[in-house]
Length: 288
Ligand SMILES: *[C@@H]1O[C@H](CO)[C@@H](O)[C@H](O)[C@H]1NC(C)=O
Ligand SMILES: *[C@@H]1O[C@H](CO)[C@@H](O)[C@H](O)[C@H]1NC(C)=O
Image 1 (spheres, rainbow, N blue to C red):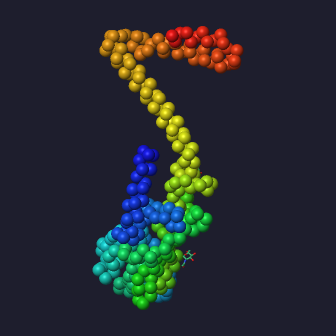
Image 2: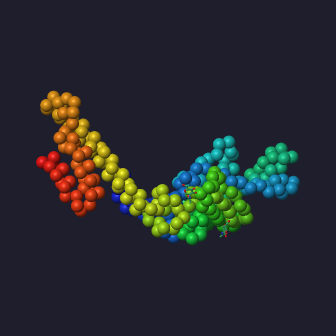
Image 3: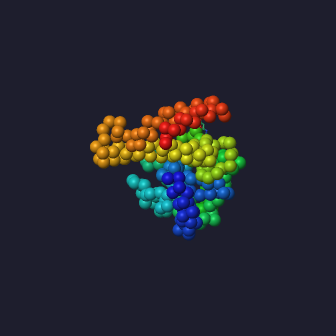
């Protein structure tokens, strides 16, 4: 299995390098040579922040599907004019709530921030911290809305113990939406030979040579076990069919196996008696 992933890597790289013309953004990418894979963050997410603006309450609400290639879906039960435009990956709605009004909640703005066809050069990804170990910043410059160019500042903090299912809306000032998200998925992927950084756990990436060596020993051991089982199974079957053997006579090369304990004993005594163990040699006679 290890072999097949390795041989398919060049193909994968080739395929990925051909992709950008088709899909400008992929959740699996490299930033400054550090690999990230944000695919686990895909799916529709929400974030919101309210502020008191008497006599009303104002709310900024973000819908967010980072990895979608088609943008967030239409919402059910929402009027056409309040829908986010199609093919929008990050969409902001501003709401105003006035409890005393007949229609208390009003959507006052629908702002597409990051569209699926936002060109690649409007998206910048920059690792945070040494070797990206603190996460990643994604900065997207979108289109104009109400005469102001809209940008997204998404900060993904690498945090192995975090489990927030949603990002946090830090702020929205006209033209700049800031989101933060603490998640283990913002940590760099140590796919290959991440030269002993000392930080990561050795289960997958680090200590590859060690894993490889033990993997080899393990494979060798199991091959041996399976080989022995096959050998005895085939041998017993053969002896049974060919000679109608019974009992101990079924064991293939019975004489050899009977001698094995003697051989081992002899070998051990030979080793322990050192150079002077010439007398033990006689034991080998049982072979011939
Ligand atoms: C983006 O947000 C992060 C943290 O929220 C902040 O440190 C950084 O300066 C912001 N970048 C820009 C360009 O506003
Ligand atoms: C490494 O693994 C140990 C236990 O296996 C765990 O306690 C620790 O948090 C892990 N460290 C990292 C950086 O994942």
